[in-house]
Length: 210
Image (cartoon, rainbow, N blue to C red; front, side, top):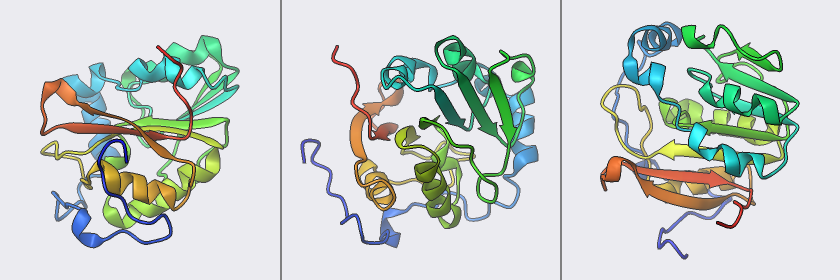
């Protein structure tokens, strides 16, 4: 209510018109596609949007962290010294992440099909929008059951190549409510100060006071 976004009832299903499908065919977007990005794309090698969120995530005092879509591994590596174990989940291993701390375990998986390891908190950044609308409900359900705490940064815009599901923040929250009734819209940002690049943060932890 504070943000002014209208959301569905938690028990309802998604309304199809809230989902924008920028990619009609996604058969070519698979593990090998992301492996190439991790090896050749400067953005994938440099960016990890979850690094900026580590203080909030660590404020929940987790012992085991599950990062879904670990990418170049910068977040998992950054928090390794503050937790007992990190499960870094992805279906492509970045060359930058071959060397990693001993308590960071790379878990290669296609989470549309495979199990997500259990932990105290499951988190991700710029990951969920990369799944098709057909797979998304199953993926969110798996994330929600893997840990009692959740924290997810989600891009709500079309990136021009690999965002397969684009929804407004309210629709993302409605989807999360189906599996995590305590989830809330923690924050909405404009990435790069662009109003057409909305990013929302959804989770069920309370960020520390500034």
